[in-house]
Length: 334
Image (cartoon, rainbow, N blue to C red; front, side, top):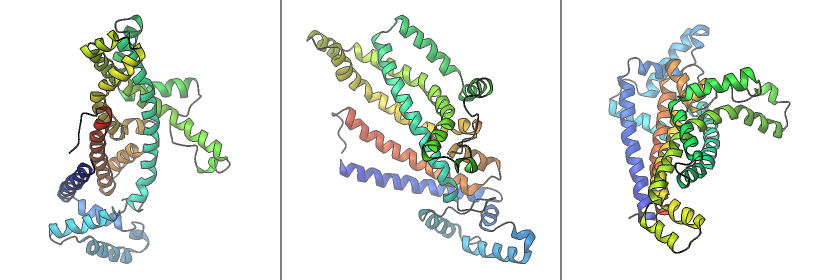
């Protein structure tokens, strides 16, 4: 097991290295990419207040970034800075990229943890129950709702949620991630927690509803297939309780294909929450990426976030392999 993990970690580093090469040379091929990097390193307000100092700083930035050096040398200079956590500066606010994306990254992780808990808490019991009671009124009703859920895009669910809960009922905020620094200064820690949760409800609701239909149907289909197997009939013939048959025998084996789709979905919500975060003006990774694309574009921020998503995907695949050994002891990692 430990040998396999070491091999996979080395594989992650190798793939990450290849991706950094691709990202860097894509960056170099973008018209004006080098100029954007140089401008991000220099405070643009100097252009008006002190033009001579501005020109001097621009020249220093060109030397520091290695602009004009051979491409291979530029790449290793860039890679060295990246490995040290120095992704450069944002184009307009002129702050370090890592500092700029830190808060949005934490916001997205926090948001998706709540989504993960909600989806697991709903889809697993619902998928199992609909499989056990297949073709019943309950099952048919759930199938109707899942088909509707799969047909509705997330932005439509988000807009309807804002219309109902914010515009009509006025019980939940329609945008933002908190009430703001000025208001929160007068709050207790408990009130700040409630404030965070209040602003999180609608984005979590939309991302959860968007995920329920497909995962519930997948779990249901897998469970129905497992429940028709001979070993399930044998377990029932032995007189085992129905709960033992379903949860200890059927569900354990149904988890093997479910783990694959759940891992892919988990990686997807980190990368696919851009629309939801943008609609709700939630200051997360998706909204930050959207702003970086629309305002500039801010290549330093875009590439830093792409690297984050790459490492997230590679780590997710490692966790997927490890989860297989948990749900299916027959799988051995060599």
